[in-house]
Amino acid sequence: MAKKKADKRSKKEAPEIKKNTEEAVEAAETVEVEVEEKKEPTMEEKLENLEKDVNVWKDRYMRNMAEFENFRRRSLKEKSDWIKTATESIVVSLCDVMDNFERAWEQVEEDELEKPFIKGVKQIEQQLNSILTKEGVKKVESKQLEFNPEFHEALAHIPSELEENIIAAVIQNGYTLNGKLIRPARVAVSNGVKPQPVAEDKENKE
Image (cartoon, rainbow, N blue to C red; front, side):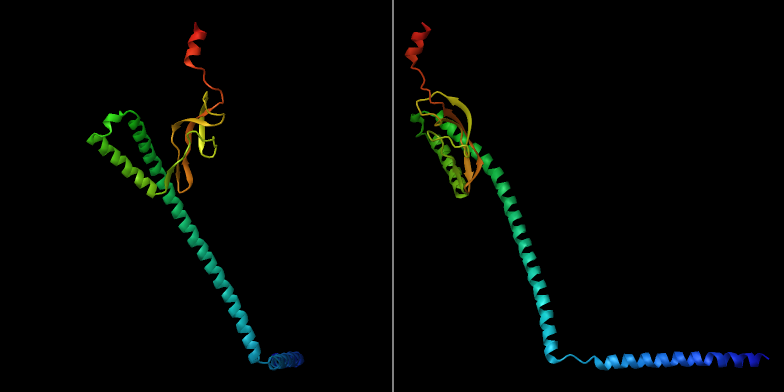
């Protein structure tokens, strides 16, 4: 009885199996035809593809080289800026020493300039000034020149024989380092009003 049921089931499934097999064979033949239709690229096509690949890699190489060059320049600039900043700090301190030398010479009498000790101190000042000059340090010229806010800092306006806006006195020297201002000159500027003579002041008081 079971055998008869199995035979009946086999007869029913046979047409479906045959259909599936035919579809599989047809699909395989279609794939085979597609493979046959897909021909191998010609030599010209291969060369064209290679040229495209070369251009792509060349472009990537050039971009990487440009990025590396920019990185190298930034690194050098940062290093240079760091050195300049450190140098500026030292130079400003040495400029204070130069100012102290000038103040010291104002207290020295003319007949003392020929003394060995004074000559030795003068040589030290000249040596320091030579070092600063070699490093690109220059004093900002100020006295009796027109006030320039880019290089001068006005601390006072005073009566003077000079015209208005002309620097009458230098309170602290200014300095530049390789053309860059590292300390402005502190000055007193003429207000254009001439001071009264001492005699007239006495008469007014009386």
